[in-house]
Image 1 (cartoon, rainbow, N blue to C red):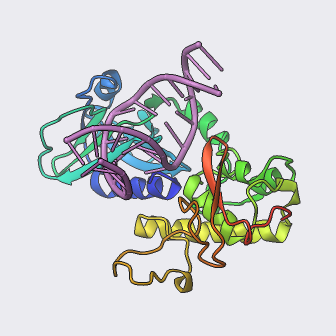
Image 2: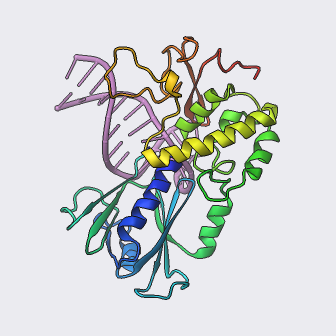
Image 3: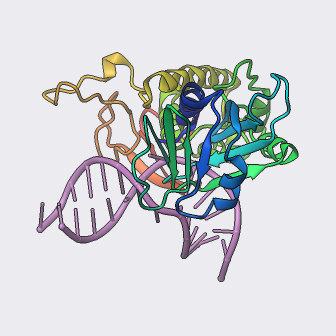
Length: 276
DNA sequence: TCTGCATGAAAAA
DNA sequence: TTTTCCTGCAGAG
């Protein structure tokens, strides 16, 4: 699920597989042929993630450590985008394969992204400056998000999905955060008590870090995670996300759903009362 | 095996 | 507001 934790996990994985390697780049599908040709033969110097945006910095092979990147690759997976990788020679390319990167040891395939492009440094800076704080970045300060949330008349469920407010939250974290902090999705941001927002942010940092470690979003507390008679290994990972009509794990009230910010949002009408 | 929905966001209309 | 990117999965049959 490409919310922010997935992208940070990918940055870490690409670093492990290809950092320092001279890559062969190609676009079997053809849609990124020009860009791939410009990357071909360069060395992947570093990888980075900001919210749901992934960056690769490439330099001429053997460039000095402080060299400015020759090329900057920007990838946004969107809804369908996916990376695959492996050791050894790459499998035969098939289907819509936007970008393939190969080193002597590993291969990396990208399919279906909403963005796969080369950016100049100012373009990258402009993109990043439009994003709110990313809970997964080292030393992040939530001030900008705090100001946006506590000063806005917009519903908190809409604000949390806005990448300019917080970078990296997707539909799963949105619904689960609102539940964990007892907030109705329609509550105006300015009516969220500051203490609740502070707790929500701290919670988000911990949840997303756990997401990076495990590769999945688990927001339920252990005592709410038991599944009576269910398959032993299956975990009840969410409180309300995609649980329309099912009983709330805390109070048993049927979970409700509505469209907010162009996506389904889910909430418990008792645990998340409309008045806040 | 088929169908519809799903993590996101930009562009088009 | 609708379309697009075009994959994977769950549930229905």
